[in-house]
Amino acid sequence: MEKTLVLIKPDAVERNLIGKIISMYEERGLKVTALRMVHADIDLAGRHYEEHVGRPYFERLMTYITRSPLVAMVLSGENAISLVREINGKTNPPEAAKGTIRALYGIDNSLNSVHASDSLENAEYEISIWF
Image (cartoon, rainbow, N blue to C red; front, side, top):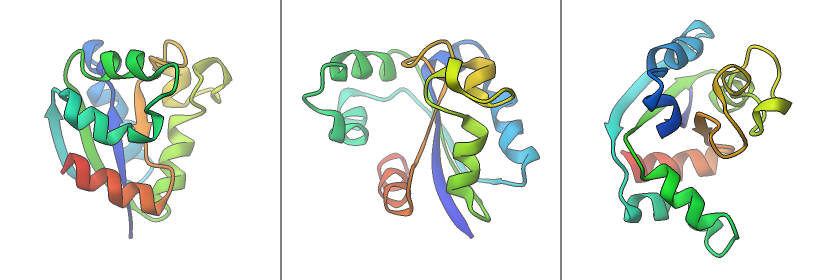
């Protein structure tokens, strides 16, 4: 059983999409094994996005992810990482496949509603940050 981290980002929480998003994962057979709502501070967000330090968009990203509460959750299931990324769709909503979370709810490349781990190694690391 594989585990992955998903963040329902502030833009989606602000628009009351938590239930709709979680149901999309559950309908595909994934199990929510941990869940918490948190208002990330700069330290927590900085650990999560440390690979982006120094990039031109870093400050904008930090402002966004800390602006209001988000939902952090661990999902588990067969091939959870790749399945979650498929359900989420491409990062940029206009490029995301029809019916994916980002195509349905994403606003733009930055306000794209969800984050998901991209590898087993990153899933373990990101889960340790948020839980």
